Picture (cartoon, one colour):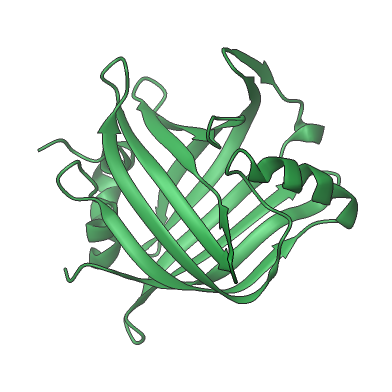
Length: 205
């Protein structure tokens, strides 16, 4: 069985995660992860950014809607790319009534740099370096260098145009749920997108 790229990236730190987070991120082709939950709050940035978010809807990357208590589903599936590289596909769906909004990504591992390579959107429109770390039993994800993806062309973005994400995920034993917080910030604008909430696995571990 292939070891999850997340597990490979974290190395020995993987064992410091809460046991339920270890199970959640030990993703393989034989063991996808699927969950259902509610985002207590989904927030956006300045209204003048909304046209860009409408544009992102077509790429399953960001969306203009925001609100509270939004139903949410997530599915992580391991696969192999054209060159045989190990990948994890992220399908995140936010249900705004009849509308389904996506925030999808495809991740692989750069073993030399020990960086998760994150292609956002379908087809990909953005690229970001990701660093995974364990903090007090929880998982933290930080994004760094970003590029605009235009087919086969990838254009490095200056910091003033980047939207850097900070993701924290923990397991709440009392409630028996995974808790997540995502904040995407631009150094000039401030927060441009974010959500926080909880979910439970559709599988019984």
